[in-house]
Amino acid sequence: MRALLLNAENKSATVHIIPRPLPSDGELLIRVEAVALNPVDSLYVSNPLGETGRTVGSDFSGTVIESNSPGHQVGQRVAGFLQGACSINNRPGAFAEYLVCPADQLWRVPDSMTLEEASTVSLCALTAAQGLFYRLGMRAPFSWPVTRGGPPGTESRGDGAVAPFSVFIYGASTSVGMYAAQLVRRSAEASGVAVKLIGAASQARFPLLQAEPYAYDALVDYRDSNWPGQVRTLTGAANGVDFVYDCISEGATVKMASSTLREGGKMAIVRSREGGAFDPDSLKVDPVYGAVWEAFGVEIQYQNLIVPASHQARAFAGAFYTWLSSGPKLTPNPVRLMPGGLERIVPDGFALLGSGSMQDRAQHREEPHMKPVSAEKLVYSIAT
Image 1 (cartoon, rainbow, N blue to C red):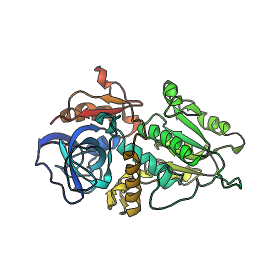
Image 2 (cartoon, rainbow, N blue to C red):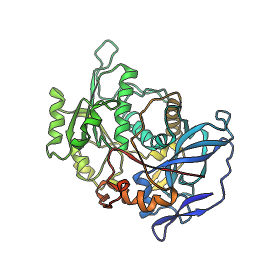
Image 3 (cartoon, rainbow, N blue to C red):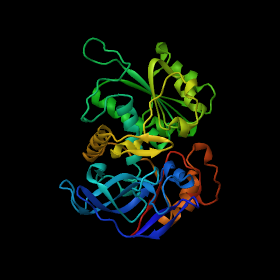
Image 4 (cartoon, rainbow, N blue to C red):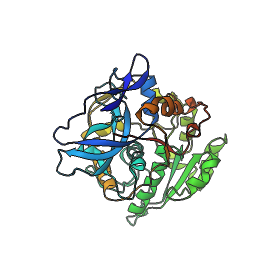
Protein backbone atom coordinates (compact mmCIF):
# COMPACT_ATOMS: atom_id res chain seq x y z
CA MET A 1 0.00 0.00 0.00
CA ARG A 2 0.99 3.66 -0.35
CA ALA A 3 1.67 5.69 2.79
CA LEU A 4 3.10 9.11 3.65
CA LEU A 5 6.26 8.43 5.65
CA LEU A 6 8.33 10.79 7.78
CA ASN A 7 11.89 11.63 6.79
CA ALA A 8 13.18 13.03 10.08
CA GLU A 9 16.59 14.00 8.68
CA ASN A 10 15.08 16.15 5.91
CA LYS A 11 12.12 17.32 8.03
CA SER A 12 9.69 16.24 5.35
CA ALA A 13 7.49 13.31 4.36
CA THR A 14 7.18 11.39 1.10
CA VAL A 15 4.96 8.64 -0.28
CA HIS A 16 6.35 5.10 -0.17
CA ILE A 17 5.07 1.57 -0.74
CA ILE A 18 4.89 -0.42 2.51
CA PRO A 19 3.15 -3.66 3.56
CA ARG A 20 -0.53 -3.49 4.37
CA PRO A 21 -1.05 -3.83 8.16
CA LEU A 22 -2.80 -6.80 9.77
CA PRO A 23 -5.42 -6.27 12.50
CA SER A 24 -4.94 -7.92 15.89
CA ASP A 25 -7.71 -8.98 18.28
CA GLY A 26 -10.11 -6.12 18.89
CA GLU A 27 -8.86 -4.19 15.88
CA LEU A 28 -10.31 -3.35 12.48
CA LEU A 29 -8.62 -3.05 9.10
CA ILE A 30 -9.83 0.13 7.43
CA ARG A 31 -9.60 1.14 3.79
CA VAL A 32 -8.94 4.86 4.10
CA GLU A 33 -11.26 7.01 1.98
CA ALA A 34 -10.41 10.50 3.26
CA VAL A 35 -7.98 12.24 5.61
CA ALA A 36 -8.22 15.68 7.22
CA LEU A 37 -5.22 17.79 8.13
CA ASN A 38 -4.46 19.22 11.57
CA PRO A 39 -1.70 21.70 12.50
CA VAL A 40 -0.10 19.02 14.67
CA ASP A 41 0.47 16.89 11.54
CA SER A 42 2.64 19.50 9.85
CA LEU A 43 4.25 20.61 13.13
CA TYR A 44 5.85 17.25 13.83
CA VAL A 45 7.04 16.79 10.28
CA SER A 46 8.87 20.14 10.34
CA ASN A 47 9.96 19.48 13.96
CA PRO A 48 10.26 15.68 14.03
CA LEU A 49 9.75 13.60 17.13
CA GLY A 50 9.18 10.31 15.35
CA GLU A 51 11.79 8.29 13.49
CA THR A 52 12.26 8.14 9.74
CA GLY A 53 9.84 5.69 8.14
CA ARG A 54 6.91 6.32 10.45
CA THR A 55 3.53 6.97 8.82
CA VAL A 56 2.34 10.51 9.57
CA GLY A 57 -1.15 11.95 9.99
CA SER A 58 -4.05 11.83 12.42
CA ASP A 59 -7.66 12.16 11.18
CA PHE A 60 -9.20 9.62 8.82
CA SER A 61 -12.44 8.08 7.63
CA GLY A 62 -13.01 4.92 5.64
CA THR A 63 -14.62 1.52 5.29
CA VAL A 64 -14.12 -1.60 7.40
CA ILE A 65 -12.70 -4.40 5.25
CA GLU A 66 -11.73 -6.80 8.06
CA SER A 67 -13.09 -6.93 11.60
CA ASN A 68 -11.75 -8.63 14.71
CA SER A 69 -14.42 -7.00 16.85
CA PRO A 70 -17.97 -8.35 17.29
CA GLY A 71 -19.38 -4.83 17.32
CA HIS A 72 -18.26 -3.93 13.80
CA GLN A 73 -19.02 -5.49 10.44
CA VAL A 74 -17.24 -5.41 7.11
CA GLY A 75 -18.60 -2.57 5.00
CA GLN A 76 -19.32 -0.18 7.88
CA ARG A 77 -18.25 3.42 7.40
CA VAL A 78 -16.13 4.61 10.31
CA ALA A 79 -13.88 7.49 11.37
CA GLY A 80 -11.24 8.12 14.01
CA PHE A 81 -7.72 9.39 14.49
CA LEU A 82 -4.27 7.96 15.10
CA GLN A 83 -1.09 9.50 16.45
CA GLY A 84 1.09 9.89 13.40
CA ALA A 85 4.67 10.92 14.26
CA CYS A 86 3.42 13.31 16.97
CA SER A 87 5.34 11.71 19.83
CA ILE A 88 8.20 9.39 20.65
CA ASN A 89 6.75 5.98 19.83
CA ASN A 90 6.46 3.69 16.83
CA ARG A 91 2.70 3.76 16.30
CA PRO A 92 1.82 4.48 12.65
CA GLY A 93 -0.40 7.36 11.60
CA ALA A 94 -3.38 7.64 9.30
CA PHE A 95 -2.09 9.04 6.01
CA ALA A 96 -2.08 5.74 4.14
CA GLU A 97 -4.35 3.65 1.95
CA TYR A 98 -5.06 1.19 4.79
CA LEU A 99 -4.72 1.29 8.57
CA VAL A 100 -5.63 -0.71 11.66
CA CYS A 101 -7.39 0.81 14.64
CA PRO A 102 -8.81 -0.51 17.93
CA ALA A 103 -12.58 -0.87 17.75
CA ASP A 104 -13.20 1.39 20.76
CA GLN A 105 -11.34 4.25 19.08
CA LEU A 106 -13.70 4.52 16.12
CA TRP A 107 -17.22 5.82 15.56
CA ARG A 108 -19.76 4.83 12.94
CA VAL A 109 -20.45 7.54 10.36
CA PRO A 110 -24.17 8.32 9.89
CA ASP A 111 -25.68 8.03 6.42
CA SER A 112 -26.30 11.78 6.35
CA MET A 113 -22.56 12.54 6.49
CA THR A 114 -20.00 12.08 3.72
CA LEU A 115 -16.71 10.40 4.53
CA GLU A 116 -14.92 13.61 3.59
CA GLU A 117 -16.98 15.44 6.21
CA ALA A 118 -16.50 12.67 8.76
CA SER A 119 -12.73 12.87 8.45
CA THR A 120 -12.82 16.36 10.00
CA VAL A 121 -14.52 15.35 13.22
CA SER A 122 -12.58 12.96 15.43
CA LEU A 123 -9.45 14.70 16.72
CA CYS A 124 -10.86 18.22 17.04
CA ALA A 125 -14.28 17.21 18.36
CA LEU A 126 -12.72 14.94 20.98
CA THR A 127 -10.27 17.71 21.89
CA ALA A 128 -13.24 20.02 22.48
CA ALA A 129 -15.14 17.38 24.46
CA GLN A 130 -12.11 16.69 26.65
CA GLY A 131 -11.62 20.40 27.31
CA LEU A 132 -15.22 21.14 28.22
CA PHE A 133 -16.36 17.97 29.96
CA TYR A 134 -13.31 15.95 31.01
CA ARG A 135 -11.14 18.87 32.15
CA LEU A 136 -13.47 21.77 33.01
CA GLY A 137 -16.19 19.50 34.36
CA MET A 138 -19.17 20.80 32.41
CA ARG A 139 -22.01 18.32 32.07
CA ALA A 140 -21.58 16.08 29.02
CA PRO A 141 -24.53 15.20 26.78
CA PHE A 142 -23.51 11.54 27.13
CA SER A 143 -22.73 9.27 30.06
CA TRP A 144 -19.26 7.97 30.79
CA PRO A 145 -17.82 5.73 33.51
CA VAL A 146 -16.69 8.47 35.92
CA THR A 147 -19.61 10.57 37.09
CA ARG A 148 -19.17 14.27 37.73
CA GLY A 149 -21.41 16.91 39.17
CA GLY A 150 -22.68 20.05 37.58
CA PRO A 151 -20.51 22.76 36.09
CA PRO A 152 -17.86 23.83 38.64
CA GLY A 153 -18.34 27.34 39.90
CA THR A 154 -22.09 27.46 39.22
CA GLU A 155 -24.59 27.82 42.03
CA SER A 156 -27.69 25.82 42.83
CA ARG A 157 -30.91 27.79 43.05
CA GLY A 158 -32.10 25.51 45.86
CA ASP A 159 -34.61 23.61 43.72
CA GLY A 160 -32.10 21.11 42.40
CA ALA A 161 -31.48 23.15 39.27
CA VAL A 162 -28.21 24.79 38.33
CA ALA A 163 -27.98 28.51 37.73
CA PRO A 164 -27.29 29.76 34.20
CA PHE A 165 -23.61 30.12 33.40
CA SER A 166 -21.40 31.62 30.70
CA VAL A 167 -18.72 30.22 28.41
CA PHE A 168 -16.18 32.19 26.38
CA ILE A 169 -14.44 30.49 23.44
CA TYR A 170 -11.37 32.21 22.04
CA GLY A 171 -10.67 31.07 18.49
CA ALA A 172 -14.34 30.45 17.76
CA SER A 173 -13.77 29.81 14.04
CA THR A 174 -11.00 27.25 14.56
CA SER A 175 -11.84 23.59 14.05
CA VAL A 176 -11.79 22.92 17.79
CA GLY A 177 -13.75 26.10 18.46
CA MET A 178 -16.54 25.18 16.06
CA TYR A 179 -16.98 21.79 17.72
CA ALA A 180 -16.72 23.34 21.19
CA ALA A 181 -19.64 25.68 20.50
CA GLN A 182 -21.82 22.79 19.35
CA LEU A 183 -20.89 20.74 22.41
CA VAL A 184 -21.77 23.62 24.72
CA ARG A 185 -25.18 23.73 23.04
CA ARG A 186 -25.63 19.94 23.30
CA SER A 187 -24.66 20.14 26.98
CA ALA A 188 -27.25 22.84 27.63
CA GLU A 189 -29.94 20.83 25.84
CA ALA A 190 -29.14 17.67 27.78
CA SER A 191 -28.98 19.35 31.19
CA GLY A 192 -31.69 21.97 30.75
CA VAL A 193 -29.29 24.63 32.02
CA ALA A 194 -29.21 28.01 30.30
CA VAL A 195 -25.81 28.94 28.89
CA LYS A 196 -24.58 32.27 27.54
CA LEU A 197 -22.05 31.53 24.81
CA ILE A 198 -19.57 34.25 23.87
CA GLY A 199 -16.86 33.90 21.23
CA ALA A 200 -13.91 35.74 19.74
CA ALA A 201 -13.23 35.60 16.00
CA SER A 202 -12.77 37.90 13.03
CA GLN A 203 -15.83 39.94 12.03
CA ALA A 204 -15.88 38.13 8.68
CA ARG A 205 -16.86 34.94 10.55
CA PHE A 206 -19.62 36.50 12.66
CA PRO A 207 -22.51 35.49 10.31
CA LEU A 208 -21.32 31.87 10.28
CA LEU A 209 -20.94 31.72 14.06
CA GLN A 210 -24.23 33.46 14.84
CA ALA A 211 -26.15 30.85 12.85
CA GLU A 212 -26.88 27.24 13.75
CA PRO A 213 -25.30 24.96 14.77
CA TYR A 214 -23.00 27.37 16.67
CA ALA A 215 -25.60 29.98 17.70
CA TYR A 216 -23.33 32.32 19.65
CA ASP A 217 -25.17 34.75 21.89
CA ALA A 218 -22.43 37.36 21.45
CA LEU A 219 -19.18 37.74 19.51
CA VAL A 220 -16.20 40.05 19.83
CA ASP A 221 -13.57 40.86 17.22
CA TYR A 222 -10.21 39.48 18.31
CA ARG A 223 -8.50 42.31 16.41
CA ASP A 224 -10.04 44.86 18.80
CA SER A 225 -7.51 45.46 21.57
CA ASN A 226 -10.31 45.85 24.14
CA TRP A 227 -12.07 42.57 23.45
CA PRO A 228 -11.42 41.21 26.99
CA GLY A 229 -13.25 44.21 28.45
CA GLN A 230 -16.10 43.70 26.01
CA VAL A 231 -16.46 40.09 27.13
CA ARG A 232 -16.61 41.09 30.79
CA THR A 233 -19.22 43.75 29.99
CA LEU A 234 -21.35 41.14 28.24
CA THR A 235 -21.56 39.15 31.49
CA GLY A 236 -23.16 42.03 33.41
CA ALA A 237 -22.87 42.01 37.18
CA ALA A 238 -20.74 38.86 37.17
CA ASN A 239 -17.94 40.88 35.54
CA GLY A 240 -16.52 37.79 33.90
CA VAL A 241 -17.38 34.40 32.46
CA ASP A 242 -17.59 31.10 34.32
CA PHE A 243 -15.52 29.17 31.77
CA VAL A 244 -12.90 30.07 29.18
CA TYR A 245 -11.82 27.67 26.47
CA ASP A 246 -8.84 29.09 24.58
CA CYS A 247 -8.65 27.26 21.25
CA ILE A 248 -5.51 29.15 20.16
CA SER A 249 -3.41 29.22 23.35
CA GLU A 250 -0.46 31.11 21.90
CA GLY A 251 1.53 33.89 23.55
CA ALA A 252 -0.32 36.94 24.83
CA THR A 253 -3.76 35.60 23.89
CA VAL A 254 -3.68 33.22 26.86
CA LYS A 255 -3.28 36.08 29.33
CA MET A 256 -5.98 38.13 27.60
CA ALA A 257 -8.41 35.20 27.56
CA SER A 258 -7.79 34.48 31.24
CA SER A 259 -8.61 38.10 32.10
CA THR A 260 -12.23 37.53 31.00
CA LEU A 261 -12.87 35.12 33.89
CA ARG A 262 -14.90 36.02 36.96
CA GLU A 263 -13.52 35.18 40.38
CA GLY A 264 -13.54 31.42 40.75
CA GLY A 265 -13.87 30.83 37.00
CA LYS A 266 -12.03 28.06 35.18
CA MET A 267 -9.99 27.94 31.97
CA ALA A 268 -8.80 25.23 29.59
CA ILE A 269 -6.16 25.57 26.89
CA VAL A 270 -5.21 23.48 23.85
CA ARG A 271 -1.43 23.99 23.98
CA SER A 272 1.01 23.36 26.79
CA ARG A 273 3.15 26.18 28.17
CA GLU A 274 6.03 24.90 26.02
CA GLY A 275 3.92 24.67 22.87
CA GLY A 276 2.10 27.95 23.34
CA ALA A 277 5.07 30.00 24.56
CA PHE A 278 3.13 31.89 27.22
CA ASP A 279 4.03 32.95 30.76
CA PRO A 280 1.87 31.03 33.27
CA ASP A 281 2.79 33.47 36.05
CA SER A 282 1.00 36.26 34.19
CA LEU A 283 -2.34 34.45 34.12
CA LYS A 284 -5.33 35.09 36.36
CA VAL A 285 -5.81 31.34 36.89
CA ASP A 286 -3.88 28.14 36.39
CA PRO A 287 -5.40 26.79 33.15
CA VAL A 288 -6.01 23.08 32.70
CA TYR A 289 -4.26 21.37 29.83
CA GLY A 290 -4.15 17.84 28.57
CA ALA A 291 -3.19 16.17 25.32
CA VAL A 292 -5.91 14.65 23.15
CA TRP A 293 -3.59 11.64 22.81
CA GLU A 294 -4.67 10.61 26.31
CA ALA A 295 -7.60 8.99 24.53
CA PHE A 296 -5.37 6.09 23.47
CA GLY A 297 -4.82 4.99 27.07
CA VAL A 298 -1.05 4.55 26.67
CA GLU A 299 1.98 6.50 27.92
CA ILE A 300 3.03 9.21 25.47
CA GLN A 301 6.15 11.39 25.37
CA TYR A 302 6.31 14.71 23.52
CA GLN A 303 7.43 18.33 24.09
CA ASN A 304 9.49 17.20 27.11
CA LEU A 305 6.27 15.91 28.66
CA ILE A 306 5.26 12.43 29.67
CA VAL A 307 1.53 11.83 29.42
CA PRO A 308 0.80 8.80 31.62
CA ALA A 309 -1.48 6.04 30.46
CA SER A 310 -5.04 6.81 31.53
CA HIS A 311 -7.78 4.19 31.37
CA GLN A 312 -10.22 6.91 32.42
CA ALA A 313 -9.29 9.11 29.46
CA ARG A 314 -9.70 6.16 27.10
CA ALA A 315 -13.08 5.33 28.62
CA PHE A 316 -14.18 8.95 28.15
CA ALA A 317 -13.14 8.85 24.49
CA GLY A 318 -14.98 5.57 24.00
CA ALA A 319 -18.15 7.04 25.49
CA PHE A 320 -17.83 10.07 23.22
CA TYR A 321 -17.44 7.86 20.15
CA THR A 322 -20.44 5.78 21.21
CA TRP A 323 -22.46 9.00 21.41
CA LEU A 324 -21.30 10.04 17.94
CA SER A 325 -22.20 6.58 16.61
CA SER A 326 -25.78 6.84 17.87
CA GLY A 327 -26.83 9.31 15.17
CA PRO A 328 -26.01 12.76 13.79
CA LYS A 329 -24.81 14.78 16.79
CA LEU A 330 -22.39 17.37 15.40
CA THR A 331 -22.11 19.30 12.16
CA PRO A 332 -18.68 18.66 10.60
CA ASN A 333 -16.28 21.48 9.89
CA PRO A 334 -16.72 22.99 6.41
CA VAL A 335 -14.56 20.96 4.02
CA ARG A 336 -12.03 22.32 1.55
CA LEU A 337 -11.47 19.28 -0.67
CA MET A 338 -7.91 19.56 -1.88
CA PRO A 339 -6.77 18.29 -5.30
CA GLY A 340 -4.55 15.24 -5.45
CA GLY A 341 -4.03 12.61 -2.80
CA LEU A 342 -1.25 11.56 -0.45
CA GLU A 343 1.44 13.03 -2.69
CA ARG A 344 -0.01 16.57 -2.42
CA ILE A 345 -0.35 16.72 1.38
CA VAL A 346 3.15 18.05 2.05
CA PRO A 347 3.60 20.54 -0.84
CA ASP A 348 0.07 21.96 -0.56
CA GLY A 349 -1.65 21.07 2.70
CA PHE A 350 1.34 21.38 5.01
CA ALA A 351 2.42 24.55 3.20
CA LEU A 352 -0.93 26.09 4.12
CA LEU A 353 -0.76 24.95 7.75
CA GLY A 354 2.85 26.02 8.32
CA SER A 355 4.77 24.52 11.21
CA GLY A 356 1.90 24.46 13.66
CA SER A 357 1.25 27.99 14.97
CA MET A 358 -1.36 30.43 13.70
CA GLN A 359 1.34 33.05 13.06
CA ASP A 360 3.19 30.66 10.75
CA ARG A 361 0.58 30.63 8.00
CA ALA A 362 2.04 33.27 5.69
CA GLN A 363 2.13 31.01 2.62
CA HIS A 364 1.02 32.89 -0.51
CA ARG A 365 0.21 31.06 -3.72
CA GLU A 366 -2.16 31.90 -6.53
CA GLU A 367 -4.06 28.61 -6.91
CA PRO A 368 -7.68 28.79 -5.65
CA HIS A 369 -7.17 25.83 -3.31
CA MET A 370 -4.19 27.58 -1.69
CA LYS A 371 -6.01 30.54 -0.18
CA PRO A 372 -5.46 31.04 3.58
CA VAL A 373 -7.30 28.60 5.84
CA SER A 374 -10.12 29.92 8.03
CA ALA A 375 -13.24 28.21 9.38
CA GLU A 376 -12.70 25.11 7.26
CA LYS A 377 -10.74 21.88 7.17
CA LEU A 378 -8.29 20.70 4.51
CA VAL A 379 -9.35 17.24 3.31
CA TYR A 380 -7.79 14.82 0.81
CA SER A 381 -9.56 11.88 -0.82
CA ILE A 382 -7.46 8.72 -0.76
CA ALA A 383 -7.92 6.54 -3.84
CA THR A 384 -6.92 2.86 -3.68
